[in-house]
Image (cartoon, rainbow, N blue to C red; front, side, top):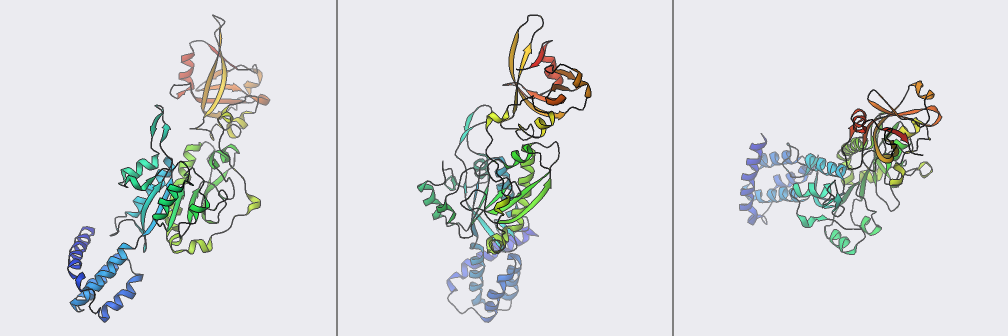
Length: 421
């Protein structure tokens, strides 16, 4: 069916090109009615109406109808997307996939009569990442290139207040900007350019956890509920009116990377649902101002926070500061242990990244020495504050792959672990 329609559209456009020279002739009453009523129709319905009317209307009026359809097709909302990491790329990918829905005759058609054009992408400049530390473009930049966006429409300013960038950005005449983990503060001069404003997908229930690390800090605090918000961007960090939000319960074992991915997936759904109202301005009219008295903040993670102190209770280490789940991925959660050889008497310090943990419920730990680390079943058991213990299920040595506790034990070759004091 779609192929037939597209074939018909091509034939129609060929016909249109032959008629354009006649556009100055009288439109005809039937096509005047077509022009006014078609504004409320879908593109395919508008096309069908044209064919029905053209069967009875004077042929000299066809060029005017053709002009109407061409005008409709050319009036796409110019949208600029800003993002950098992989979760941002997933939003851009979702946006492009939704815009190219199979039932759409129009490129970048999202829903109803709301048609957008991805006018440009703004992302962080290339940086060193992955194990090889090679200089690589951001995941958003890579996706944009893969999807055919011209390189001159992929902007990578070091800061968003660069005059050269702002000048180029203004020339795009964007109507709406969408941000998702872009990573740069947007200046007032930028925010004044898009006529319909700038909206941000933020992975928290604003005004809670404003800032750079909302997911990590929510897990660090051990909260049971979080969510994602779609909010307008203002000069104050994450303080703009909220268009919509969605709540989710936090699974007790979920880690930051998985939760972040889940929240941005929910954010994609919010964006798709709200896009028509964002483009026609109704979202701005009904957006709700944040309650400043309830605002909390989620500052950027400091690598030094990743060190574990086993003087704290196991539950705190697992659920709070530093948080194994919250710091999963980057910067990770690290511990400094002592490796003791009974035969040679040598003792060496070792930095160990703790990947997966659970709280030990074995009361036998209380009778053991406070600094004695032992293995039990599939875990490395480390005594903690107030007679509690943390079971470490997965670990990672510097420069090595993640392994289970049993495999790590085999690599010790009889040597014992002690808590570094």
